[in-house]
Amino acid sequence: VHALERDAVGLTRNESVDPSRQLFQVEWTPTPATCVASGEQGRRLWAAAFNRGALASAAQLLGLAKRMVDLAVDYTFERKQFGKPVGSFQAVKHLMANVAVQIEFAKGPLYRAAYAVVEQQAGQDVLVSHAKLATAEAAMLAAKNTIQAHGAMGYTWEVDLHLFMKRAWALDKVWGDRGLHKGRVRTALFDGKPALGAGSTF
Image (tube, rainbow, N blue to C red):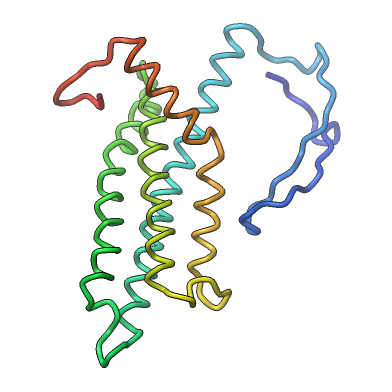
């Protein structure tokens, strides 16, 4: 782990699928003088930072999923087809209901992981990964179903849905993609001795 002065770091702007995010390539030269932690101490700091970053992105993903559903529900009850609001049709209701179920399923893992990180509990790695996976699944389904509920309007800049959808796509890949987090869960399940039953995630 290194600590540097701001003017010692070069930043090059990178493009993102979400234009509201500012991504940069960082260029700097590590030296013994900038190193503030190494070895086991450095590993613990990196692990803690990674878990907090993944947890924060998971929380955003859950909020994005909820917001996308809210937008779609509002839109489908304003838009009319065959003399009725589109949102009154069962097929559209099912699209939104499926996302609502995923959102509720994702809340538990997210809250449990947040508690583990704040209390610095053992085993927080797998809890954070579970939260990231659950919230990413909810957000990806929300993006898919809500844009379907919006129809062609969902692809336009006139509707705000694309802002939340693009942010969800971007956050799905940061602080570990789904492959990495599935790997951490798999390792905990098959190489460790996870607690089973009520009160335990696994």
